[in-house]
Each structure stands twice: as structure tokens, then as C-alpha cells.
Image (cartoon, rainbow, N blue to C red; front, side, top):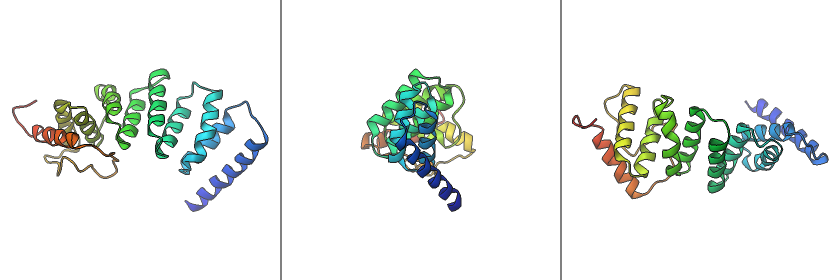
Length: 200
């Protein structure tokens, strides 16, 4: 892995040198730089070249996804969310793209957007397993306790478990951003409701 990272760093250095001496009108070198920098989690380095790639080719969904990720990882939450919104609303998107955007929104605590973006993937059967927990949190955050409870039920069904240890502990490997006390109360209410036999 270290050797692979070393090769990528060397490639990044070469690209950086090449981009400094040319004002390329092709998006490929900027896109490649952005891709490698993103893989290496060099978020600040990725941002500029990805913006340039989008300037040259504003129709690329992938450039937008990478730029959004680089912005969100730098803590530029509003900008990152806006790039994701533009990507979903104005460029070709399948349900999976919406789900990935929603997960990015959940990661930074932007539950309003997440709740909206999860809707189509949920209807299309794209959401599986522990991702239902992220749906539950986002729905609880916007006050939709019934939808959150339904997500808890799907979560249990998909994992074939009868009991979730806690309403407020995310499953391993799922990053959930901060949320307020109201969301926590709604989440606990949805959790309790998901055990009610009378409620469907």
C-alpha cells in the first residue's frame, strides 16, 4: 500500500509540475490530478484542479462528486452540499448517486438534504442493511417519526436481527454527524415505535 501511495504521490508531483507550466484547455489532466489527490485524501490539493475540470467540462457528474467530497472533508459544508445538490438536480443521476449524496450529507449532519435525497433510493429498493440507520436518523431529524420507525424496521429485517442495541449508536462503519436533542428524542421515539406490534 505504501509503495502504491508513493507512486501516486510521484504522479501527483509530475502532474502538478506539468499543470504549472501549461494552461491546458483539456479537463483530463485536472481531472486526473483531482482523482489522485482525492484517493490520497489530499482534499485541499484536489479542490482547485477539480474546479478547473468542472469549468472546462461542467457536465461531468464524477468531477462534481469528487469536488463535493473534497469540500466536505475540508469543513466547507455549505459549499459541498450545494455542489452535491447541483450534481443531483442538474446532471444525470441514478438512485445510487442520490443515496451516496445522502450519506455524505448524513456524515456532516445535514439531515434535511439527506432525508430528501434518500427518498428515491428507498422507493427504488437501493437501500440495504445499515444504511437504513442513516435513513432513520435523517427522518428523525426532520420530525418524520413514522418514516424513521419504518427505517428501523427495514434495518432489522435486512440484518435479520430482532433487536438493535441502541437508538443512538450507529452501526460500525457508518459515519453519522452531530444532531440536536430534538432529533435524539425523535430517534428514540421511532426506535420504540419500531417494536410496536400494532404499528405498521
